[in-house]
Length: 304
Image (cartoon, rainbow, N blue to C red; front, top):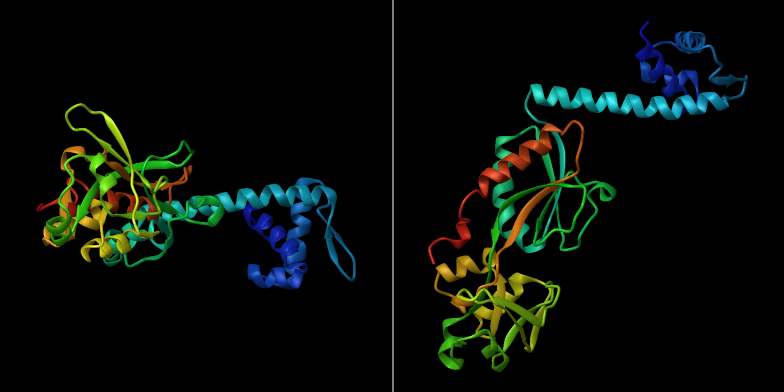
């Protein structure tokens, strides 16, 4: 009998606490399970488990061996799974985390197409503007927007996320359009509290490259870009939004872009995943799919 089977039997005995339960897991009789453990101990030349009529318990060296062999068995199973997935169609459960607005507005259509292309993969997506720890929170892959802090995660840039200043045509007709960022101090602004500095909007002069920071105020503040969009459409003020939210409404004529010569540098939209010696085929499949789907000029920036 091969050593791998003996090691798996030993792990099963410790985890179930009995030869009967372990034999059921392994598909052998309890008598065979006992003989297999004795064979393993003979091969190693040590006693791994103390046997009494009432209970089984690991010896000190048995516990050390269990902790090490458990890790090796798990790594072997992960490698087997990765190789099988590489050879065939990707499969398994894929947990994804993404920002609320981008996830709901732009990522969902992409994921629905991905699900059609990969029927063997089940996708569990969590929309949250909270920065989660992929490893600690059990996520396989993340979509994030903005400047990324240094980390050990693998990063692939998908496309740009522009920040645009917008208002409704009616608001501009009544209050006028700002000519320079500083003019916003005389306007009613709609505040998105998801930004790191919600009441300070940052612009960039397209001619000089100079950065301009403007303190803005307004009656309405939301921790959601789509809510800010709705308020701007209702002519309640000027909003500062990612173009993946505002772009479609600009194209429809429901919003007009302002201060185009002072648009700040674009942020990046990225896909991230933990480094792994053997990258799961399901993670690679989604990463490659999203890179292709969002390649080039994003759809939301076209036509205006």
